[in-house]
Length: 333
Image (tube, rainbow, N blue to C red; front, side, top):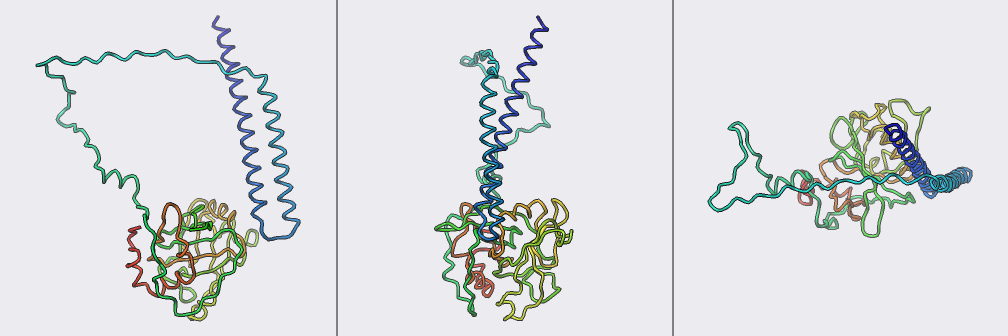
């Protein structure tokens, strides 16, 4: 009798593993197909051969997905359903209510033991979120206009990159009708010296509006920059008019795996994140690097549209003393 039970249990386990294996194969096929289609639709530039290759890959992924669904459906039809496990209901013990004049017994608490007090409402809110969200938008149109004429940005890129030097984070933004939605964000390391870059070798990260001019990868990319680097057009026309010098400002990996280190002025994310960031970046992608004492206000995972503008950013740079009146550097969002 025990032998038959063991054989039956082994069959049930094998059936369960077969079912889970097939479900995992189908899920993997669906995910691969979705990623391939997303990459195909994301291509805005490039030679026709590259687009044909990506679309062909997407078609092969979809075909494999259909075959997997068909095979799974045919196979699972012969697999008996999993055994039904029944559980016995445990009746709760009756609660004895003491009669009048009877003092209920209290749990024994030793002198050196204390019962923790419940957290107050304010403490609970602080534990839930150490960074309060903005509940109202800020009118950046009241800022004085920059003292110089800014070039009109002309980009067909799908995404916009914002570097928040205060948080030391990189935001990937997608433009909506009313605002910019934060698609993804990554921790970043900046120049080892704080402030806006002025001259070559000052180890500062520049602040301004730039765009990607080139995407570099190994073997031409040195190992210390990780698997990918995005070259920025520093110094731009505004920097040159202001007499700034230097070159070679990139957004790149670290060459340290999941770690990062201070840079000589570049923006560095770890090797894993730079690969994911590469899914959103292309030549021409706008890059806004905000002043380090300005904490970008975030409202429900979005950024105001009138903030991600060249005139707003450069106005903040010229009027640093006004930033505290718009938003406090200590992060009162």
